Amino acid sequence: MFKYTKIYSGGRFPEIKEMDTFKVSVHYVGEGVKTSNRENEVFDGTIDGASQQLKNNLIKLLKAIAKSEGKRTPYYRLITNIGSERTIERYMQQLRDANLIEFRGTALQTGGYFLTDEIRKKMNLKKTI
Image 1 (cartoon, rainbow, N blue to C red):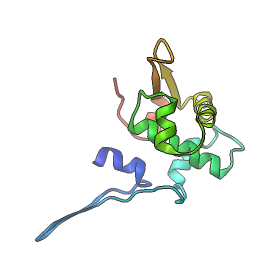
Image 2 (image 1 turned 90 degrees about the vertical axis):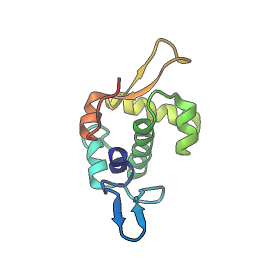
Image 3 (image 1 turned 180 degrees about the vertical axis):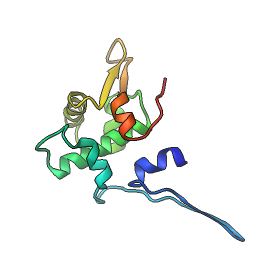
Image 4 (image 1 turned 180 degrees about the horizontal axis):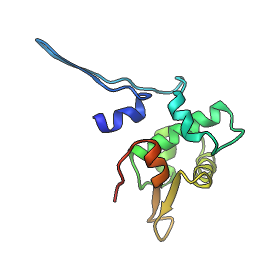
């Protein structure tokens, strides 16, 4: 829970309260909520001239990839709901050009998208094998 909460909550950790009952509060930065300055820092200098809406969509896609690496474009289109498959492909290309994600695999049907070591460091995530 603590490993991934920072990604989806704008940097906030879950609140755990133990009294007569046990309560856990997890804050989620969903659609319609502005991204934090820390999330925008990921893109500073990598995607110059991008609108805030584009940055928000790229951050949402990047979070989806971080949560479930190794999937292909159709999967990310379904879970992010930020556009058509062609739009997602265009966003993927922008993230690849910025060296934030990479495609691993020998063919489009068997490969998937993964975070690069560079973005993993910025997001404070451990490397997956």
